[in-house]
Amino acid sequence: MRSLDDLLRPLNRETFLDQNRARPLHIPAPEGSDKRSILDWTTFNGLLSQTSIWTPANLRMVRNGEPIPAEAYCVLADTHAGKVMRPSPAKVEVLLSTGASLIANDVQRLTPGIAALCDGLGETFAGAVAANVYCSFGGVQAFQTHYDLHDVFAIQTEGEKVWRLYANRAPDPVDPPEPADPRAYFAATRGPLVQEVRMRPGDVLYVPRGWYHDALAVEGASLHLTLSVTPLYGRILFSLLEAAAMQDPTFRAWFPPAAPDGGAALRDHVGRLMTRLTEIARMPFFINEIAMAQARLTPRPAAYALPERKPLTLFRPAGLIGPRIEGPAAVAMEWALAQPQFALEDMIAQFDFVPEPALRGAVEAAERSGALVRLSPATP
Picture 1 (cartoon, rainbow, N blue to C red):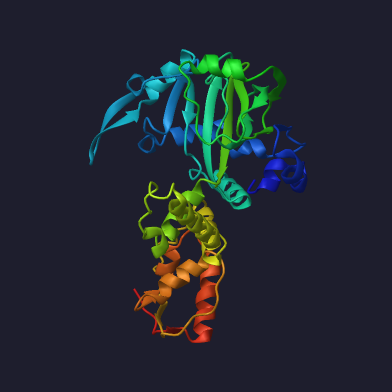
Picture 2: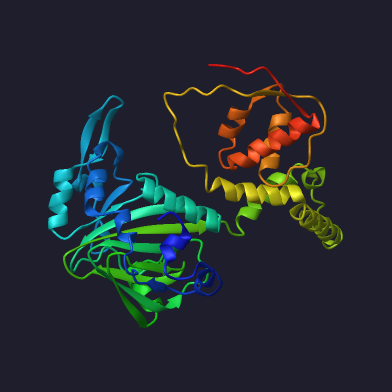
């Protein structure tokens, strides 16, 4: 399972993207599905046994909706860097026996299957993808009713779990609510129960951001993997526009005082700035900045090839204007043309959020145009 198509099967991908993204969707496991194999008990136990990768930040425990303090399941471990808090397998197991649930966060790179699926979702939605594992037991509820700030794809891999979906949906939330009594707040705002979904191994449940829900393991042990997808939204424009606007002297000029003419000069000045902001936002370079910010959410997957030591491909700019490059690769090419000399491999490493073929294509085009000159190969 490597893509959105695999995750949605047997549902049609186009149908989901066109019609189903705005409401929850339950996809029962089709005949012969291997979706549950992405994380079985054996694989999860193997991950947990790698005790050096876990901390109280990425391995959490919850009971009846309340977080369990790290001191209750962690111990101080000696390392070469000093003492660090690490979850104790023995303490974790005791708490699980008393009805606690276990949440392993940020597992998106820990197995090839999960990594491939996260990469596929990130590319499809141009968003950051995180993967978390939830281990719970019959009659135990880890979290009370809530909504998430991201879209969720939940894959039931072991056991069964009942998800309850409520009528209401917060409109595109980007910040969590901070009520004095969260349980009372969500109970009062969730609306009536509209659907109960019993998730069995291989089932997938899609829950869009803002949709009120909760879940309960009904009997035995339950294991499910959630993939949270968070694309960019309008807030990113403020930081990108600030950076772009401050290169323009117009935005560095003092504001005129409002008092002398009832604010007329100030209104005119602000109006000119807003017009200029609109012009900047429509420029190709600014669209490239947004595209680059999207690309940073899905960096190129790590791939080592040791013990090979690759030769470096060296170039120097010839002082000519390079070819027109579109998209995030254009920013990388600006960097390359500003260097006295650079290695293509270093460029690929520095701009790891730009697809490697796009970078290689841009350099090849610049070499053909004469803007870059290839130097003698550098060997390790």
